[in-house]
Image (cartoon, rainbow, N blue to C red):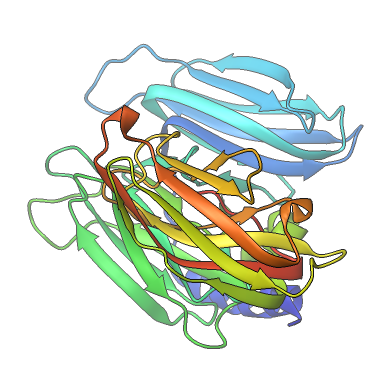
Length: 368
């Protein structure tokens, strides 16, 4: 294991020093966004917000703020009138990670937690929505991560973005500009030795005269902790859990024979195991394509209750890691039966690169 967080601290300071040479833009939020912070019971947390009108428009949406505690209970609800700055005090009732939902509707806001680490949430189910300005955001690239994606969408005509991605030493690794009228994923390859560290990204206006940075929704793709921090040292608070540690895999067993399945097709795949692993995590890793609805890809392992492949989306391909019950495995021949269910209107799907993973730690991944 690398000295991950000591590396983040040192490299993060270098990045901050470089960033401080120029003034940071504010992160202006629009619609619904989430912040997170960690605190102990009894602490007083200060949340600073600024609710503002969208220039040139008249929407009546006040800022709505809610705090969700570590037990997933909403413990504070408050409205902030337009054109108002406010610091909201919150007495922590449960120790652990808390979320702050800030809903500005069609107007704008800024929000931050004072005097402690905090992060913006940016994942598929809870994307980050900004409007016209965003500070440099730092995110964690875990060990063993070879590539990752960042999804962006700016679906209003004349709006777009230039995204630049930097490694922990400040080297520009990838950049892409466009109108992003439909959601696109910017794929970033991680150079050898650059994993296990805090990276960063910036969003700016594209150089094209007919495009400007305005409303952009974006999020971090699979394999990345879904947190953005303005200070890279804060990432340690949110990304140190076991779910972000590298897999510890002892054995990989290839499962041959995967292919495309047409309407209603069933394929049976087999493999051999000398013995059922004791006290180990077992997972099935596979790449699926064009899985459009929850019942389309039915999987039966050794005749047990079926489970279903996660959705990839129409024409989309994703790689999943699915934990399986070790008691369902057999010493000797094992069978995996996969059926394409056409009842939702799909004419087919595809499978490839199946393997069984056995280890002391294997993280499950079911999608964005």
